[in-house]
Image 1 (cartoon, one colour):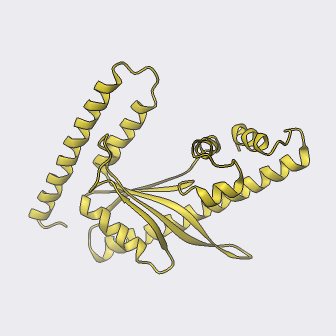
Image 2 (cartoon, rainbow, N blue to C red):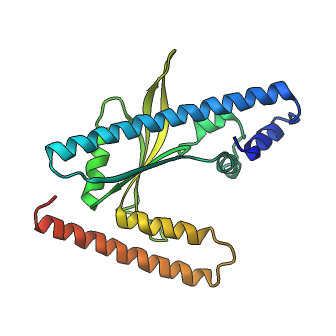
Length: 224
């Protein structure tokens, strides 16, 4: 666990860091919370693996290219709570943040995105909490992706607990653009940032047009 979140939490509740027992208890509780999120990610990725295998056998074409995942870093968690005016507590992490655990699914074609989303959320143990469709409604900077917040049950030795996971589904081209845009956005002292943003937006539009044309070709030759 990174030092930043420890310090932020302890400052919030006015506990000096050298108060060993209380500090150790917080560290243990935070570790357990992150374990719960990691287990939730494993549940989601297992479901995606099963769907991937099924589609490869039954449909002779797998729309899922790759699956990536991550747990938000402690420093990022503390910063997001602070930005949103929330107390930096473990309760706030688990009840107020939806994206601590994240899974990203990369697909070949745009239609595959909606196919995978529907197959995943139609499973009766998954609760769909929210959807943001940035493919039909792109962000101003050109970002395109399909976002869902789901709750998935995780079975422990003494209980079943529903845990929130953010699932992002996008094409290979969308993921390529988003990865590069992220690097540029967080680089300091970028010259002419307005020009860079305009060029990135133009790239996003070209990529979107390419995605659409690739899907048209796939439909024409009947591989979808």
